[in-house]
Length: 350
Length: 249
Ligand SMILES: Nc1ncnc2c1ncn2[C@@H]1O[C@H](COP(=O)(O)OP(=O)(O)OP(=O)(O)O)[C@@H](O)[C@H]1O
Image (tube, rainbow over all chains, first blue to last red; front, side, top):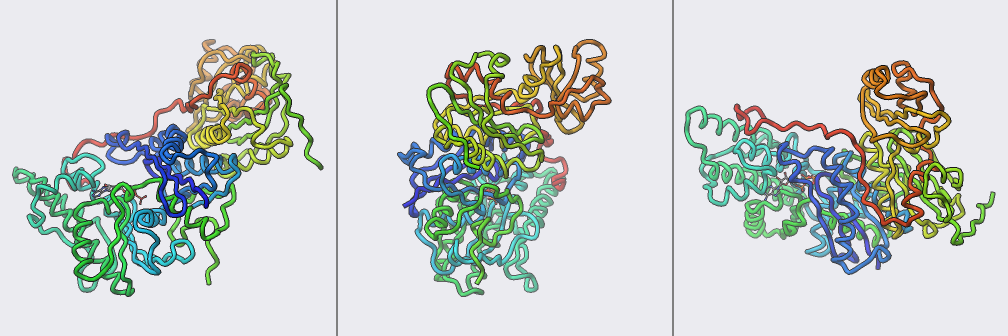
């Protein structure tokens, strides 16, 4: 058995995880989120500077939790893309150095495949086929997934504009809620009425692509609603608007995800990414999957947002599949599409 | 050609040197004798470069550093375990390359359980360019600026700074910065504006970088947390609160 050290630095979280044979043994997370708050979004240079300082301590925190030392590490996995180039460089450089100095193989993996693999750490291996809804600050996609590392990943759809998490963040700003907006809206919505405002369900019309996503119009609808109230001098019911917006996002996401399961005759829906931490997304998914006889898998919130454990999880799957390791010259790929979990050595297409 | 055999006794320490603060990615393995003087200038002639890899390509840092380290250690006829310390150039340098070099050095040292020491990357030039008493060392800071420091008999006089070439030329003209010659890729780039005689050390060398760290190397100082010298704040603007027009997204 091989202990895999996973490193994640694609955005503002420095994540390190240790996984062996599908079991998460220890992890550590250091976030520069608070440094970005006053800018209303992640500043790449600030994120990258923070990764430099955080990475070695995070490795040791994860090792301490796992009761392991670097000598026990048998492979390194790192997010090589997609993400902020400047941030990715830090993690990839660290991973290469650890792999070289420890003389262990290196795997360069796709961040989004990591999100999907996070679920295997709590719910075991994925079934032969599943639909994965990846919904985060940077992505909103439906994927058709077989074996995460042996089969190609089929993109069923991607958002045509904003990601759902981005819409949460921007709507939060409109409502005067703090960054990051997702958790703030989730909290505010708890005391609001979700049917107070009938916000649109984007791309759910008869002639719209059945699996398509678009959140920019919904975000603008919320902004317009708030502006109309403000112009009339009326108070802005933040909780109600937050709840109604959240309902529109959750409803749209889950409708499309279930449609994808039906269309591709798949019995399992996996929801991952930061927005999978949303309480309404989780509840609605549970409700509708139960009603539709679908198995629902959602990792716990701390494994939904960016973390190192999920990267170690993909690395562990690659090691167990006897995948060829990456070379030490593997580049960062800031905007790589998800087609294979392993960015440097995709298995041969049949 | 067979790799040179290396006898590792108590007489020397093999040091891995990494600098990626400029367009030149430099990695090397340097012998530091145990009885090396703790003074960088005095120590420099006593150091032996066992292997060195340098490529001038600002975009190649991330891809190359670990490969260069592996190759340098092999060429030195050593193994990773034979390394006694890591020395890293901590800039000043423009961002990604600098970070990649520093993180690589820190992770190597951590993985091998050895100390890492940071040195000013300009020292890797200034120590090597001591054939004139007072030398201005300048590297390219991008954005039409240079990082610079003044060296007197190979010793740095003050902290490195960042200026536009015209402003640095004004300081030279006013005698606020005094130098007989200049060197470094930044000086070469703006040679006309700066107007001093040009020496030929463009980039930091591994021996000079290792020499800059001898005070720590010979005393066995505790490992350091490497702090990159950026000399600039990140570019970022604080947005103006919840927008007046909420549609101004
Ligand atoms: N409880 C929540 N409800 C809604 N959104 C949430 C919640 N918690 C987090 N989010 C959102 O999730 C996003 C963060 O997601 P995540 O950490 O997965 O990664 P990311 O870096 O934004 O994107 P990616 O993983 O695609 O690169 C943010 O937009 C945040 O607002």
